[in-house]
Every structure is written in C-alpha cells, then in structure tokens.
Image (cartoon, rainbow, N blue to C red; front, side):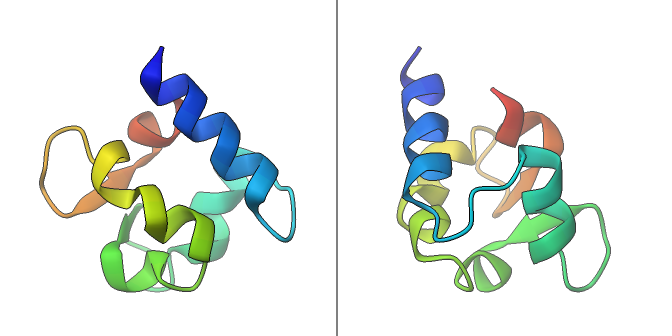
Length: 68
C-alpha cells in the first residue's frame, strides 16, 4: 500500500504526467531497462522517492518496482 501511495504521488507530482512505462522509457537514457539514481535525477519527484521505490536496494528502478 505504501508503494502505491508513493507511486501515485510521483505521478501526480511530475511536471508531465506520463504512464509508468513511459517514465522508464523517458528516463532510461542508457537503454538498459532500468533507471539509475543518476537517470532519476532528471525528475525531481522520482529522485525524491527513489530509495523507497528501490525495493531490492540494487541502486536501480526496474519496471516492476515502478508499477507496484
């Protein structure tokens, strides 16, 4: 539930409201299928909740971490 609230806040707080799949596509500049903290820094809302969304604590956000 907490992740759902954080993800919802992220979407609403973003300057451009885009689908979660589009967030990955837009911010994954090296096209490795995940978002690093450096890539997330392009979106203030995402970078502010990066640590909470990074469930497996690998330093990246995967598509599954973004959709939960």
